[in-house]
Amino acid sequence: MSNIYTEIILDHYQHPRNFGEIKNPTKKVEVANPLCGDKIKMMIVFDKEKVTEVKFTGVGCAISIASASMLTEYIKGKTKEQLKKIDKDFIIKMLGVSLGVNRIKCALLSLEALKKLL
Amino acid sequence: MINVLKIKKDFPIFENNPSLVYLDSTATSLKPRPVIEKLVEYYSKYSVNIFRGVYSLSEKATEEYEKTREKIAKFINGKKEEIIFTRNTTESLNLLAYSLGRKIIEKNDEIVTTIMEHHSNFVPWQILAQESGAVFKVININQSGDLDLYCKNIKNQKSKCKMIMQNSKLINLNNIITKKTKILTLTYISNVLGTVNQIKEIAAAAKKINPKIIVIVDAAQAAPHKKIDVLDLGVDFLAFSSHKMLGPTGVGVLWGRYDLLCEMFPFNFGGEMIAEVFLDKTFFKDPPYKFEAGTPAIAEVIALSEAVSYLEKIGLEKIETYEKELVQFAYQRLKEEFGKNIKILGEGNIKERSGILAFNFYNLHPHDVAQILSEKNICLRSGHHCAQPLHQFLGVSSSCRASFYLYNDKDDIEKLVEGLKEVKIKFKL
Image 1 (cartoon, chains in turn brown, orange):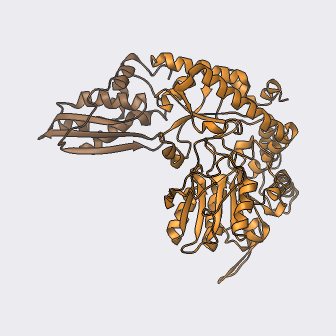
Image 2 (image 1 turned 90 degrees about the vertical axis):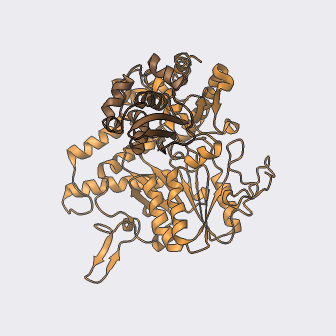
Image 3 (image 1 turned 60 degrees about the horizontal axis):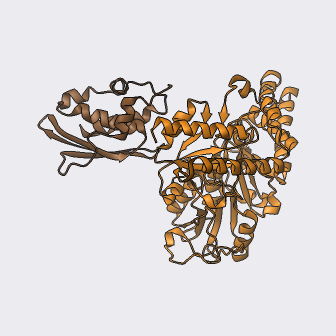
């Protein structure tokens, strides 16, 4: 688990993509990790089955923010069917680092938000 | 003086992890060899149930078990029959909320606690108040991280009173405690701020206003670090955990005044807590057995006795003084190195605090700080430390927490400083 703070993760943490609000989203959810007080709000616009816009706001550790940033980047333009296939393994692969049992929860917070949006 | 190098040799974990910097004793303490050996002794020599057998092995186990009860009683200056073994402090406090709270609390009574409580001394009372229609009052803290006992500063009454007599040592509980307050429950030492509350003075001031008030003390962070005398404190109940004071996990202690224990409801029903059972009714044993249903953590209780011996051999006064020294050194070093970029929670009480230091580092999330430190084998807690109302009040969602015990030294603190420097580099700050 040494060096989970790769350049990519630090870059997404310090300059999160898709960070902000959408005025009239199709759906909006808020998820929290009670262990550390992390909170992520995610909002999405669907054009029929396709994601046309997605944004998030929130406070959290480097892993949870980077995960949300990378995930929102990935899901733009995808269909609901494609998004339903995203699971824990996908997130771990996307982040490209191996996380311990406690930190994995931080990484999966954005996935929880996405699942609720579908 | 505390000889840390010698002490470290008593803790096998340091043999197995030579570079370990353990700064999380507030969560749980490490275990010295005599405690571990005592557990093995029970399991290898007389691992039978207590109370039930008339055979000699059972008598030996029972004798060892009851020896710990006596030892704990002496340790806090209580009586043997006033010591109840539970699973942990959390269970001790829940037992009280259930067996005492549900006996005495009625609608419009008041239950008073503080904002610096661990959830285990907050939620059981909040729920009890909700269920019974009682008023739940929460004492705030002031800027320096001490309890605000000098004015009517009760959170859910939204008083606009200024903090008066702040510098005075006179505790004034007017408007906090009233004739309707049936329970005052508070922590001895905050598990986040390290604040040591003046329990004796607070209990006396509360009882002056309402002589019938029950004063409960959460001593989870005090028993491992400070000499406790329940009679001198003048309180009614006191709870603590074995695992934070060098003992095994799975054992908690509840001390209570015997007359009050007699009046309370039992907690769990079942084996060993009954005197006689009939088809239509049951009679219970006297305290403490009334509250100890089922087979307890026998080995762990027996080994707790060794933890107490270990602490007494070194001396709690010495341990307390040593930890104060360590925490002040840590504060000074962290401030020297990082200045305003390290924010210590409850900074004002640094001279009086116990060996606990919670902080935020730059604007980093505590998880990220703790993660990088863990790569250097430095164990530090990150999160809200089961004290969310306090963190909300302080305006932060979480913090890092370093805590010190008798096996820590200044080297550990220097390693923490070095580790934090690396965090800084990693995040390009």
